[in-house]
Figure 1 (cartoon, each protein chain N blue to C red):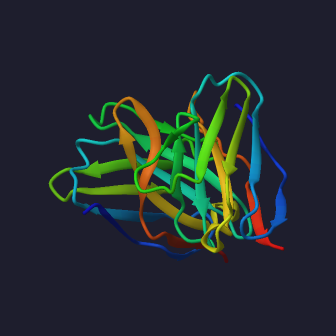
Figure 2: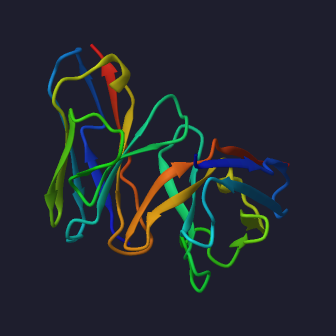
Length: 107
Length: 120
């Protein structure tokens, strides 16, 4: 199975900050990487697919990059509604594994 | 609009069975693949199972293979997860999700989640 490792596991940031979350795959997954946002353990929401494509309705302050084994999710200017837990997921091979999550908290 | 409404969770004894349902509206389950994803208490997301749009193939996480069965009823436009030989470690909130498209694997719409608790 492909292991997905996110860093950091949690971070504290202020409104307006630029935030970057990293996701590393245990082997190359090309660009088969999704990012999700989960608030207060509600249903996750798709943010980014195929590493850098913004899902419909997602604000442009969210962006994704990377290929192979290293990927990043960037929030250019953190907003109050962005405080949540973020997960990466590889869809290169079954089982489609998630990272352990990164919790973004208010500083 | 797309909506997924889940039902069927509850408390079951170890070794028991449970069937989860996910009623879809706003799209046809025969046009899209469908996922089940779970989240144990205090833990992250775990992908559980997937059924292709044409119903020809199903895929499972190793942790549930041989015990869980994903299926759908096109006439009811509903996705199911039959869970057998349940274990304590199956305790979680279970989510169904619609797959984004034929050439892309991602959950773009999700159900509200249903709680499954395995306890004696």
